[in-house]
Amino acid sequence: MASVDTLKAYETLTGADMPDRQARALITIVQELQETRLAEVASKGDIGALKASVNEDFAAFKASVNEDFAAFKALVNEDFAAFKASVNEDFAAFKASVNEDIAAFKASVNEDFAALKEEIAAFKNDYRAFELSTKTEFALLRSEMKEMEARLEAKIDRVKLDLLKWFIPLILGQAAFIVTLLKLLK
Image (cartoon, rainbow, N blue to C red; front, side, top):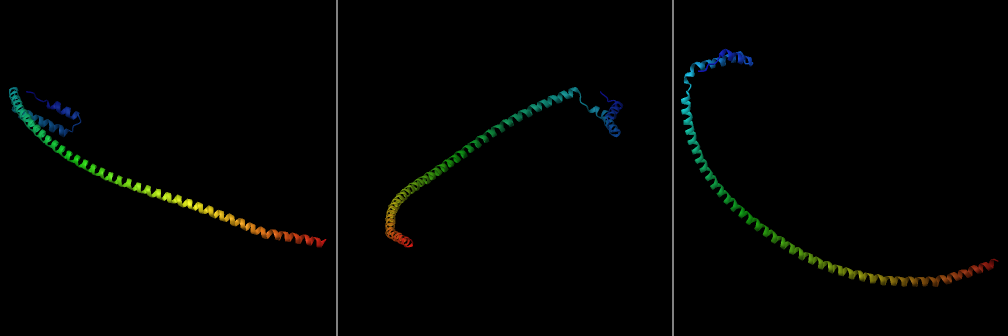
């Protein structure tokens, strides 16, 4: 049996900066254990038997755990397969719903596009009619302006002629008057 040198242990503990009271308490515990518990210490044979028993218990526990794990694994695989099937069904339903929504949206867009095409065609027709009427109105306005311009030029020519009719005799009369005045002044 091994025994502990308490004086050497005390010096080691106090040398490692352990307080005196704690070192003494620890030495007291070690002495009590030496005196009372050494009788209860098992022999190598007892330890071998205990080791064999623990190995048997561990082997049985290991087999039980392996069985439980295999059962758990099978249960998880079944649950996973059911979950996978459920997810696949839900995904297929979602995919069908999305496809229906896309088809409805596509049909709506096609209807809207067709209506827009019709509106554009109607607008083009209205624009062409407006453009034609505008061109016609511009042509009429141009012809009226040309007529007005011709009438205005004719009127201006008449006014010029009237002015000349009045100014020429007036200028000639004044020229004669000035010549007469000049003759009288001389």
